[in-house]
Amino acid sequence: MILIYPEFNEYNALRLSKLLGINAFPILSRTFPNGEVLARIPRADEIKGNKVLLYFPTYPNTNVRLQLLYQSLEIINHYNAISIDLLIPYFPYSRQDKRFLKGESLSLKLQLEIFNALNVSKLITVNPHNEDALKKFSGDIEVIPMNLFHNLLEIVLRLVGDEKVFLVAPDMGRCEDVSLLAEKMGCKYLCLEKIRDRYTGEVTINIGVSINKNYRKAIVVDDEISTGGTISKASEVLKKQGVHDIYVAAVHLLLTGNALEKLSKSGALAIFGTNTVDNPFVVLNIEDKVAEFYKKDIHV
Ligand code: R5P
View (cartoon, rainbow, N blue to C red):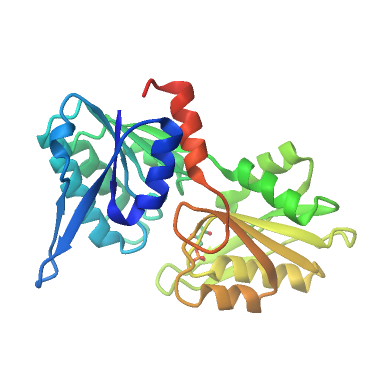
């Protein structure tokens, strides 16, 4: 197997190639004056007869990166790879897993149709927003979702101390994950109810119960933080209930716009996450987990 990666992902890709003991080749790219992009794999000749692991983060600059990803897949097909495993740590367009409003595109399904057409055989991704939807639309692609909640939470609990700490799901979509985590970790948990206005994106959070006053330390757990709207509203609600120490653990820290400002104003003390996207709050690198998976399940 060989590993192929875009230049902007060199650091993480080389770490993974070392862990797997396989060669790694870069994808170069250029941008034309009209904004179009072009991918090139200088060592494309070495693809023939090999299985390829393509490690291609699509965030940030998602739309341009996706175009480069499609072109890279086209090159890898042209040079006759035996098979293509695609590692996308944060899966793009995954929140659009249904037509929320009449006439909207089901863009998650479209992404998967494109990857099917480009002969991706395995899709490895970390904590997809909705695993069932990803599998439903995956066609011939074998989807391998890596769930890092447990690993992340273990680290966070070591860092913040586990005395009288409880886990919080900021919405019902995360409630099952959080209840399973709480059971494994031996903590209490609470699921909040989130309502998002589909036109404005505005979030409202309801708590529904009063929190036992012995529990003053919470970790809010989510798959991703984008605008920070969800977590900051959840923190405000918890603060009002007298919870002093609020920590945040999320797998994908996109932190768009003024997310950090919102989070700190809402009273969150610290943020912890993984390196599925570049950010300053990484406590867990995904490459070790990907390497473990390959060493266990697949002959590289
Ligand atoms: C949504 O249902 C997800 O699980 C996250 O809660 C959401 O994507 C976070 O987005 P934001 O930070 O913009 O509220």
